[in-house]
Length: 494
Image (cartoon, rainbow, N blue to C red; front, top):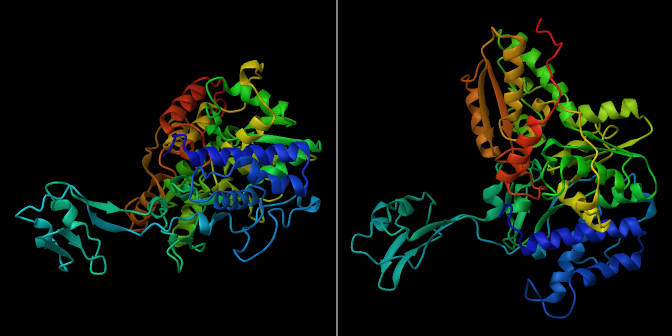
């Protein structure tokens, strides 16, 4: 569904816009309680079997978009329960970050194999022959799979000459690379937070819009309304996200128009990390002092590596992530300012919750949430005069796409240490990242530079993005080529 505008997308963006407008115009309990009726109007349901259920789900999504927890199903409380002036501006993220709205979940069956109408009731019925547990019966009414016996091995699907047997996966669980999604007592999706790394792929994979994350959109918009000085740091994947008229220079101008004191590229921090990792690889990995170097700019991949491969986690890069590196630079130059990271990622929200980072990054929102702020302020990119960006080199800007991180480091090694050979491996999607780390753990990636990305395609495929992945990749590459900065000029490889 990536890059496809669906009713789920529409509702999500309506919610972000209304929450931003509520903050900019000044909130009240009455205004909060009116929002479900504004978003879902009339008495005829548009998406589900009941307009009341639609509004109830919107109510929970509104709470999460304001950084509030889900209400208990038996809790007779207003949507605004827990919302007060005291929690505004300074409210940080609290666990759980990713949430399943139970009564929005369709309780999709877990992985199973099913026989479709393509079955021709053939004489050979190889599906019956290959099943190791005799779970398939060939009857007069058609072929039937006994789900209680089925091992889900998929052999029947492989041998069917009519492709009549299909594998049925719960979309959210199939998208989860760390197998953190199971079922509750009613068969609805349930997240195992001991495994979850907040990659957010379940959010964009659920066709019922039952999974969503918390947001600081309300707090950030309130801070801007109150005149709090906030510097926006925008992730490299921002390019092209807000439509063809929203060129990078116009996005910078638009952010200042809605109240940000200044805007910087997170690519600046990526550049600093690149230089540090170039020297580390050449001096420690290539010499055999360290087994390998695994990049760490993706927090979901980093957390997964530390959770599931603690024996080799010390070979994860110790460089600050671009978000943190840039934020700390901003805090040094503007100590009285707050910092808002704007990016494609739910996992960055989880990263900002760490005790050691909370003082550096005050707010984290996604591009989709920022689009709600632009919509609430009626920003028209066609009428904005741009303000050029010149913060980051091509290396830092390229972090947004898969292969960009490792490519930047390898490029630096070749320039500063031409005698050093760079061996590389990379993986996209957490399931593939786990396989790569398992190979490294087994000793088969000694001396390697390894890049892991939780999202297939890189950061341009994050759950908070707005554009198709290939279109966003092309925009990032164009912006990368336009950078006037030579990152390694004057840098020595000694």
